Length: 155
Image (spheres, rainbow, N blue to C red):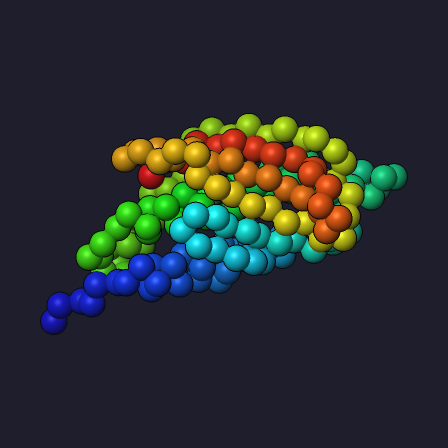
């Protein structure tokens, strides 16, 4: 019996499931996928005291900032892979996205991570056959730009 080929919508749903259900670190941090399409990804994180990096200022830990930027960038890379693929089964698609990983990432911390809710967004800068480069930003609920990053992902 031949397996059914995935539609782009089914690929999008599979990527969402991977990030929402299959990555324990994302659940540990409390990351929530807010919005995704093939051109932009958005992840939200609510403040939690256990993510604090400086108890005197009550700011987000820099490692958490980097993690959310890397996560939204990786999500964008997966979405761009899905955007360009056709005629794959679910197993073939899972094998393809399983190879995606961060090669390099730079984070610029612009302001302390103060806030009650943080939103990370990512957009693709360039995608080739083997690597993709994304730009990511982190803002709080007031729109304050906290950090941005640029990352290269192996496809």
